[in-house]
Image (cartoon, rainbow, N blue to C red; front, side, top):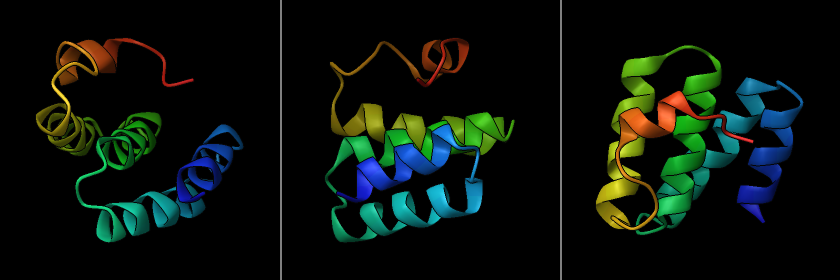
Amino acid sequence: SLLRFGYDALRGNDFPEATYYFRLATTLFPQSWRSFEGLGAVYKAQNRLDSARFMLAKAQQLNPQAYATADTYLKQGYR
């Protein structure tokens, strides 16, 4: 799946590839909170914290039970 490919790339620190898969997933499946969470994880790994917060807030909006807040997620690891 796109998410698996995205997380595989993220674990390998291939940020451009991970970004590609997660962006594609957010486009094809705009109601998938996991797509936005994945893209937020990529941005977090790149220390792009404003972008990460934005994507994680979108994920939280789609699934409030996923985690407490974007800031809480940013303090945790993505793996």
